[in-house]
Length: 267
Length: 267
DNA sequence: CAGTGGTCTAGACCACTGG
DNA sequence: CAGTGGTCTAGACCACTGC
Image 1 (cartoon, rainbow over the protein chains, first blue to last red):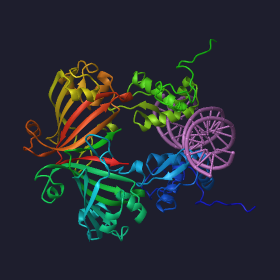
Image 2: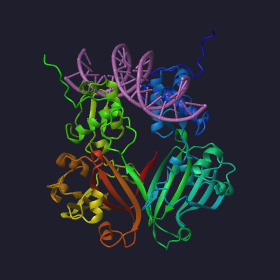
Image 3: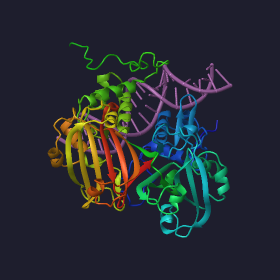
């Protein structure tokens, strides 16, 4: 039998830390094995070895591939599941998280109706106002880690619940990963925008940061949301990130909060 | 030697679930050992066997007390640490989380200055406007799981950053657990209000839910926050819970968002 | 140095899913 | 029934803290 199979990267040793920049850290920064395994799985996710919704190999398989025990793989997967990158299902397997499944649809939308459950109003009506190519201003570029003047796609849309326009959003996306995105494709797609990003552009949004403010409605916004001038709106600025903390979307939303509210849990 | 030490509750068996109501559940609802251990630790926390800031017994001690392996105790503590009820410190021990430690002060306050780091403005100035006993209205009572007309304490205060009044808060507390709370004690205490609740009233806030809205400033609020009539304010309604999901505080805050914003991370 | 939490392993067994 | 994730154990060793 020819041995030395080692289908993975080089030897893994607890304590060897490859991610330290020269002189940035005095201590060698001990990195446990399971963290390195986590990094390897993360790489496979980023490179698309397993697509959103698909099952990843079983814990035993991964343990064999990485030449560690099942328990070590398990701990790596545990953390990835805690970060909502993977979803475990007892008896079935471990799956790459996706925005397309019913249960976690609109996971990033924290606006809920004042009465009733989050999905009780039925599906939101989505109207694309515009979708055009433009050049990134300084602040847009900074948010997306681009250079000022780089090409970006700008989408403006209105979400309506039970017939009432409730959310006005401006969305900026880097042009390169989203080449070919048009108003038509957005309008025709059923389901969350982030699910479309996954299937059509292989971009999975993993994490986001939001800044909230109360702002008066100004011309343009008051028309699209059918509120009167100066009505307080909840301003929500979001930067969404893919794997490895790469920013892939800037979104500026204006929420009406007369029938809905932004819900948050503090742990 | 007299044996039979068993200082804990009765026998623990994986699969025995004591929390099921009669007929409420068809399946016996398998409950793993570590979940039962978690419940026992939770009881000790609730009963004050270990106070906030103190160390709990070592994993080995707890394993001996509950007559399970260290790994099982470890998994229970892992979950409690993930829920911010305990804090692990390698080499030192595991400690009951507290709102009094520098690192996690104002963990529930999500308003941060637009520029600079969260604590960069120095300590907030806190002015107690009033603190009085009153009767719970229907909605206050519902939020605190009391009956309408029950006695509650109402506190109104203003938080100022860099000299500017920024937050106006009305706080309602059930009278019984907070007997003896006065404006003086609030005014004299240095540090977060939730730290005072821990040391003086043995109430530890563990979790909270917030509802956010944009609302115009009305008379009273506009005076205290020094904004003009109708200025949009971020309205934040919070219900804070102790152990076992018991509601212990209702808070209605109004935040100025001209120099600060509410920051949130979506996982 | 002893004591703590943290990692890693190996193996047994359990609960759940699907064919 | 085989295959998956989930639990539990026992033991070895490592990293960190403080005396």
